[in-house]
Length: 406
Image (cartoon, rainbow, N blue to C red):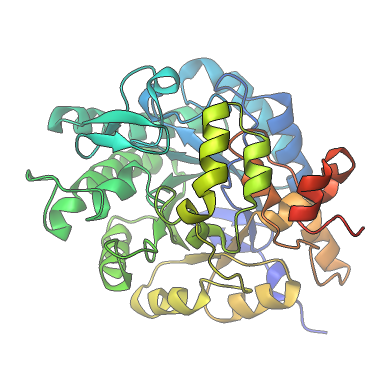
């Protein structure tokens, strides 16, 4: 019998992965006071033990101003030993370890970021809610250097690869999108100008990564997912620019957390679940009243980004990593057969951390029902699949996510 393409080893630069499955950088919410925790370690070790080629720690900020949550990693020298403890444990399970670095831009508040939030321009973030200020050209140079220094930190912590987050409406993406970038200096206006900050960050990253012989992955949008945001054509030009900088692979995603969050994840947001875990009473009531208008549903289907991703495959030469709507072995095999070197997944591995090993035994589906319970709680508590915690859920949540009949 011909071997499944899932289990054929692959390369990111010189880094060999034992198979084509990468745990994507979906936010775990498991850090403690912006540093690693035993829970974070245990989860990634479970995924490594479950058979993935590489697992990715998510959403690590390159500096204090880029932190959105206390449960998010903030990269600094003092946490290198704790990160190294995680990478050592992942390596012992036979998997490689990656980490996603980025900056949230205006998606935070002063208490968490340690200062007034920053962005491309002066404005007000309805979701925090808070005012934020425009970053100066001098600050942008330093932020780019912070991205480079983050590569040094993660190298010293034993990571095998680094993923730069340039999508989903965070800081680099805020500069790329005309919706959020309305600057009138050299960082705004034309697409070439809007790519300038991304170019600066990736140049710093590549300089350090080449020094350490560390492969670099970039996560980028194919569409922002709403009228007035970036569409396919400009994002292909952005991807070509990223390719020209010598990165080792692109993760093709889409959506804007502040404008089109379900474009990223698909399906509907369980609002009752989401508000159940919120701590601020005013936020609970606000989201209960207008949550469905603020977070509109986008229909789910298997491999929902594939049609757009194939257009990027035609336009680019570098290795591409597909993400989005992968919970079935047959669908993963189909995506890999279309010219994608690797796939990333998250929800399937939240539901079933050993799904890769199960697929080796012939299991077809991870069992994820796409209720988005894990998404609804991810910014208030650590991520978890509803199937793992259903015995502790109130009836209103069980009803909303369709478990009240079990």
